[in-house]
Length: 386
Ligand SMILES: [Zn+2]
Image 1 (cartoon, rainbow, N blue to C red):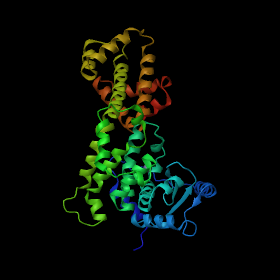
Image 2: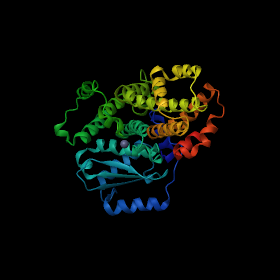
Image 3: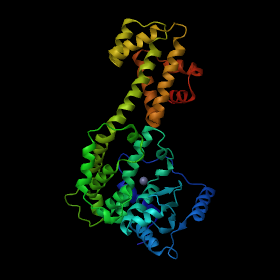
Image 4: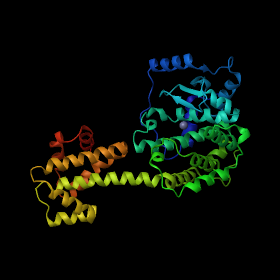
């Protein structure tokens, strides 16, 4: 059967992890950009071809077949480096460009390599590169999305190699740099490693990492291998296997218990700050904070935050208060935008609506806009977009 790119994309979408939200814009790279990539890779690495690298070429062909992707859509190169690295570049919707280090090729056997190449092809099929921010890890939100993208790509890697064992072996080898002679594939023991550190509060560095910790990836792949989708793709026996949304939920719970709570706290705190300063702007417009306003603040923000706000206000004169509060609102918006660009765009206008109806100020947004010279461009954009 001959497959088209569409078949491969459909397969990839069928296994996409639920938290890996598809990019909205599908890009087509400019042909000059594609030429630049091809030229750079061809002059600095060896292209995988039936003539020069026959074994690797067979692995690449098999990977494409398993993922229902026409081989013409994939270009792959090997570059000389002891580092254990493979990546997919470009954001073209038609052509996939992959580069693998010689270190990876030497370390892995054929099935393990199929997992690694399948993973990279997975990023292409799922259009992860269309959203250039995801992998830059420029916001906390992006790093969470990037982690979810890795979970999806691992699933394509598993389909490409067809077996859980080489998939996990590839992960352990690339994590450690060790060859097969030194690794005993004891999966429960490896997952126990995760349990032994799960009591320790998540490190900031871990939150900002674009990849999930490896034991989480292994566990996510185990869940996927128990599902109907994988069974229907391999031996076809789906009896008693998990539905995709049930296994996605298991993965979500694992991710949350290891990483998610702390990330969520950061989002919540940033959102509360915006709400606090928005409320302050609203109540101080008439230059005074009366009893009923104080009560509303107590209910919305809590006693502690209200007290802090009151003491903050008491330090400033009536003339300067608008500017001071807008400056505070501005930095709260910027901070939230930095952590969660997508979410903040949606939430901040909602908060403005809530606060303006809470304090019966239908012109609150207009008031802030009129004072927009006191806000940064970012805040003006978010506030105006509601
Ligand atoms: Zn990846």
